[in-house]
Image (cartoon, rainbow, N blue to C red; front, side):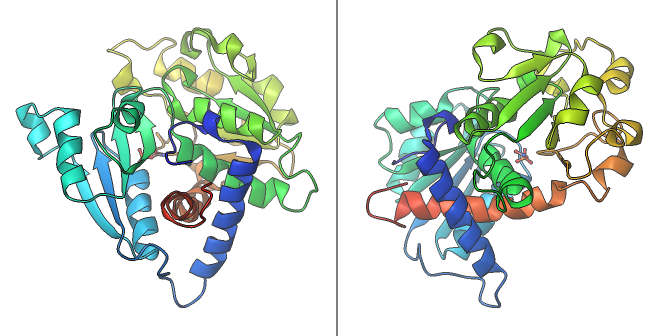
Length: 313
Ligand code: CP
């Protein structure tokens, strides 16, 4: 494939190739020589119209570890603030010889537009678009789950149960995870108040529940989502306090998990809202490891898209 726009575009073979490549690259990164020559002479542009800490730095680290040249573009401080369009921004990058454009945008569908418009010849990687998708986050989450719950079993993540809890309505992470985990054979339950589940969720390949306490004892991984108040236009029901009480992961709820169950969060976290600090920092939490795994997964994605194999990922 030329682009990575949606987790739903990946076949099981595609996803497993990315995960196994990430595993090899993570092992190599543990060795003293951290830089590989695979993408020497290629240029990766990080095109970020929305704020990011993890994803932007992670793509930069991934591209540099593969010896690519990296150009970081943030809309803030660029000519976008003077009204320059996505098209003209893309044409400018194309003129500078980008081989891959990693794009984060507040508008759902912006990476698809970039990939299919003919404005750029480069590969387009969706680094999060609006409330739509965040496929590399889902890949790094699946990689983290696989390391803890799948690699010692014949079916990998087949039949493993995952709860995704919180503001599903505004979450591109939840949608990408639901699509990818289904492809990998895992079973997903979305847990949220009715006001934070999207219209049409019944068409997603998931179960849904309003009751976190019924779901937690049966799952192998629990992924907490941030409440995205910046996308709520001032309204938030239930109230933050009520939300925390009914849907927050605290020590009492963590005690209901099975011994092997891992606690995940894509970040950024709001400690004290969807997760308490003691849970976020506990032995069960793999939140920091998710970030480490993100670099290996993004190395695998760039490597496979830009030149790792002739037939594509
Ligand atoms: N998980 C994630 O996408 O984090 P950032 O917004 O910091 O990139």
